[in-house]
Image (cartoon, rainbow, N blue to C red; front, side):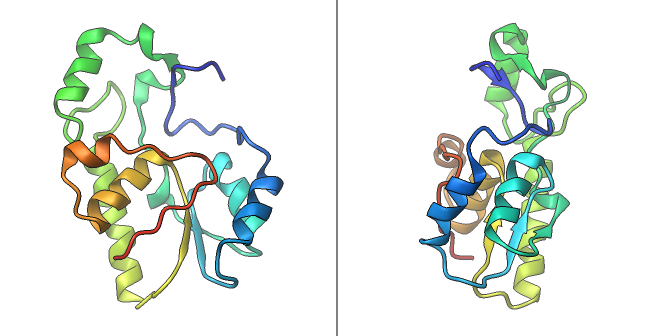
Length: 160
């Protein structure tokens, strides 16, 4: 995929070698923790390399950018990108979903884990979803969690 492409819900293949990434992560993660994953291939492939039976959870899927999906950011009308930047939680890309809907999914996922009294889990998901985990778990202000970046195969710990 070309750099500068907008993608979220698009079901892309992993950009990295999942076996190599999983081997590195296994050395850092406690064994036998429950593992939850987005159903999108770029997460599912890594999850399946990490765990014999990962739990697929639709709430962990990345934001749907609608008509922006797979377009170069430079080709998206500037007024639309500016409107999204001005109100990232509430703006709805044409045919997509607002980040507030993703946040509601993340909250629902976390509430379910709390109800199950899960102490430690592993989650394989997307950068946008991870930003919202940070917003919920670290009580970060919007300006801070929006600026966070996550690398594929990175570890980010959140206490909920």
